[in-house]
Image (cartoon, rainbow over the protein chains, first blue to last red):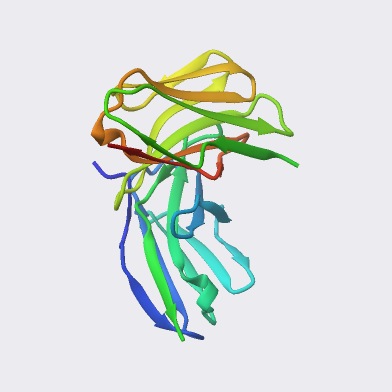
Length: 110
Length: 110
């Protein structure tokens, strides 16, 4: 049973485009959600936390839909430097490890 | 500020050889510590986690083991490596639901 699912992509978008990824989770008791960014052959880095109704940070907006059990990441005005793999993660409580999706690959094209 | 150190960055080991990967965290005390593995084309798989010295939870039965001899030190070991142990090994720490990753060790078993 897969707990966190993501479309693997790749999403190929032109510079300046808006792109959105979804991530579904299966445990309705999950409390916290995150988006990580992973560059090729590097470690994942925390991009955004998603608590309650969502979060916005510059060009990035993360939303949580508890009724449908998914979170989303919206990137506006895409930059070449946004090209990476985006991983979503869910957590059940403070001391339990995060469960990660396999990631969605984004390529922003000039 | 907190930092996490993981070494070596890359490692090539023959089948049947032992393994020891070390991870240390600075700038915090009593962190939760995690070992994840990311195989080629696959997601992050949790291997072990620890909420305190000497306390290890194993998520996936296999020929790997982990130890936490000190508060901020987490070691991943194997007595005899298998070809299937190849992958990208990531140590992470956290004190809330989120996790922060070290640079990772890319292990190739030949």
